[in-house]
Image (cartoon, rainbow, N blue to C red; front, side, top):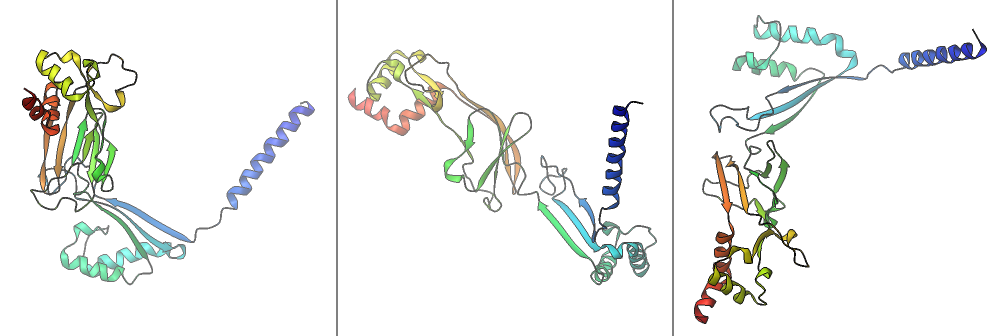
Length: 270
């Protein structure tokens, strides 16, 4: 072997020795944590709102003990099982009667342990509004109580915070889409004149239906972007209901004229 080969071998041995030292120097744990979950993460349908669905609760629990007690855990379990008269080899809460649960909990409370739980009630997380469509966002007046999240199948989910909807008849706006009509294609300088022209010739080519962000300056030709959306909505006290929404140019024009009072102005001019 050459001097270069020997030098490489020495470096390799040193590296292995260093790794071995690191492995043996890992400190012994002070605490032991036993972690488990109960329930499931499903949100599409949630019991008891839906007859068939995911669990209402998703819980993540941890029991923490000092490492010096690790060897005693099995004896704790056997003692509890014996006290409650169970013939099982495992201690599982759902397999116990009401009286056994009470006794087991009283005994566990006397043990040198600490318990932690993160519990999530999914009834208020159940999908309230999911939209399949572009340009939708949280409505301005509810931005502090509604949270958007990406959902499956290219949908967007909008979830209200708990206790926002209390009664069956409660309603609220969750999402909005900033879409409008661009009348500059008519060549008219004022809105009533543009509307009058559209009412007269009935041509949909003289105006465009676009998201506000696509109404550019200077004016350029553009393809209409109709409002088309589908999805589901529901609440803690209401079933999930599918919906489909379409607003075309003429419908939006009628709504615009009604809200702006343009139709009344045109009638007075006539």
